Length: 528
Image 1 (tube, rainbow, N blue to C red):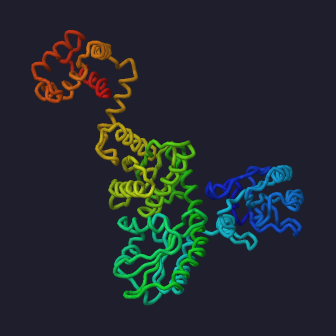
Image 2: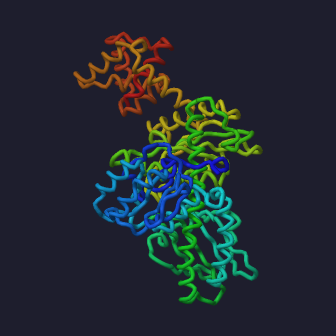
């Protein structure tokens, strides 16, 4: 049986749940133990060989139940992987002690996270091994969503769309004679709800239950789909012209949300598995490690580019920053996948990196720029943060991906230094500024490149309250045009000429030497 299915380890399985959904009270004796199946724990049932590798859901069992504590040694001998239960504030010390002795992991499930959702998630990742079936793929789950959309349409009496939290269309009903208007046609054809409708979604996500919308020309009702406090998506119903949805339709849509939650959990978890594998591969690829990414990343030929989305400085702990970073990564992944299915992203060091394949007919950064603008807008509207985005050049072989990443990083450096008017730029737009910033860094920090005259000028300005450093910088940036340089400092041209002569007399600066002018300019420009 294990030969037909690659089972996840308990660590991998728990990583797929949200941080607010589960926590590990005690680790298993084997940190790499595989979870082969899951079932409800029946304390009256004798543990047999079929329990090996199982995760048992202790539904309704208190952590202090003596029957549970007494059963742990036999369960450990049977080789179960873990027990999941809801502690609900009960004392857990004896349970942890007994489980540790038996070599069994104990998983605490949040009170707000329904057991039916836990069951669906485990089914989606481990598969129903009792029937020898593999875990659900995202394609299977999406296929089920189309069937669900038709079923809900029949119950509600309207046309249905099922969407994820990023307003992407996952499925829609296609029963004969369904009402349709330009809005529904637009979102189905584009597979994405346009940004102009985001205010309606913010209202829906804040509300409880079914919400009515008076969208012309056809009426709409919608409901948010949640697992506990976790938003999974939404269901929208479009009615016929001149009619309104009745209370029965609202009840049917609310009931459909519970069914849809299980399907959307399967979609999300199957997608999460794929994204995690792709993210780890991308992390290695960006670092320049030797990998063979073609098959796993799904990019067999053509150009690609790296986008770097930099988070602003955020208050709070590193955990808080990581949570925001993962939210941004989810947003980038969702938006990127609508542009190119084979895209992938990873969050590292306060930056979300995305690898975006470029179309053969247009191997330039236009698609990347469109994606970046979409993410900037949605991050500001939904996450309330302002990102900076750097885009590297298009590269063809995977071996050149690290270069595109380095260029994207250099763009971010230019944007952070205020050397560009936008929060978004491609390397070709700022290449000269990026090169100069690198040269500046070398000149400023390497003693070999530093003139003693510059240090002397700065000391003189501090002690005598003069402005020789600013005067010299203005002269160098004005290519020796006295009148133009004097105007930038709002002084008379004769005053400016006097200062330049004094700089030469006092500090031995030779402004007739082009090499010296270049190095002086590089040393001074980072100061102002």
